[in-house]
Length: 83
Image 1 (cartoon, rainbow, N blue to C red):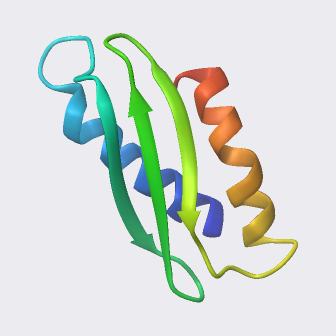
Image 2: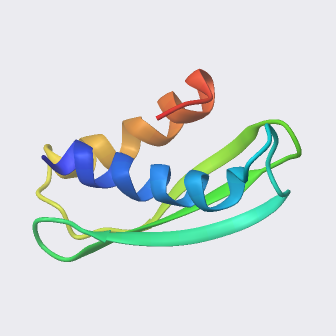
């Protein structure tokens, strides 16, 4: 469930800027979603045609569970160019 929340926050940011045609509006955007122990805030940076960075900027998740997702998912999203 925690992985879903972090992924949902990133997907929300991506959906906001993807627009009706393929391509992104370059820039860095922030969003948050409720985690188990508080909000999980993410910052996603886009170039015109790629997700260049995903960073978890705040989380209070369970050590070894939610923190593992927060550490691992951003890299995977950038590598896959998808949530």
